Image (cartoon, rainbow, N blue to C red; front, side, top):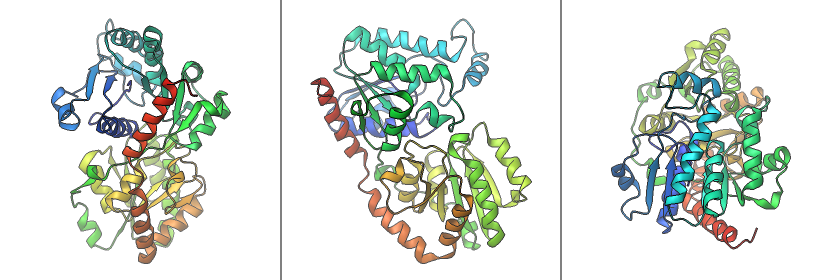
Length: 398
């Protein structure tokens, strides 16, 4: 299995998904060799702590400067901090260097199927397929159209995605929303794409710490945005909805958890709208820190412009907060008991936020029903579907 981030060294939902799926596959007696694209602190002791009781997961770490959600410009800045004779001169060169190293690993390891997560890993998957002759399955967690919010694409990235999908033996999409994008924008036949929704495991969200209780005891309501502060995630719509809410109820505090290339722009937007005293930017959070803000929130809002799935609403529900999610998201396919809105409709978004923070009965109904619903959206279910799909691909039953 090829991926490019894994907890605790993850910057978003992809790493969480890789962790959950890999652990669930190991729990079903599937031996997984997970190849990471860079040298990070995922040691054998960490693997044993999470998976190695039965020792079905092995990690290979390829020394690389690849980082999750990196852009070409960002890669160059990172690269310049290291020795130029070690790393590729561009992001694409580094992706190709990773692929060449993956080919050597594939020659040495024994495996039945290749599973590659997202575009940075696709060339590695193709090289492994070429040297081994084993079937390749690509896992599409996001397309280039999602990452850019529909504002054009990086042609080189798009070409890698399209070529890899054409050569792959099978494709897993995290939602029907994503499957439709693949068919529409990449020309891939629908029968080649299997939809397997992401999941979540309750055991990872036990004993969430109590924080921000002073704010709660003061009677203020907390509305949370948690995600990368990028065009894909729609943070500007969250801020605009916040302004409308505060016009009617000034006793609401808006938390923004995350980081990204739009962070300064969003801070300036909050200041321009005159609400900077009611918007708190808490930076990138993970683990107990993130779970604590979920638990403290009265409502979690995910206003994504294009969200292939979106694990954060599931995390929020388990932690104790109902959710308002964009209709342009894959998670809306598995959540019935959630408020939904178009990402651009800040008036509707504001009205729904006001409804939840003003009416305790609505809060209780939303959270109680969604809490029961999320219990059925598990990584074990996703892993079973993956195993069935592996079997079909291996038998040539596509």
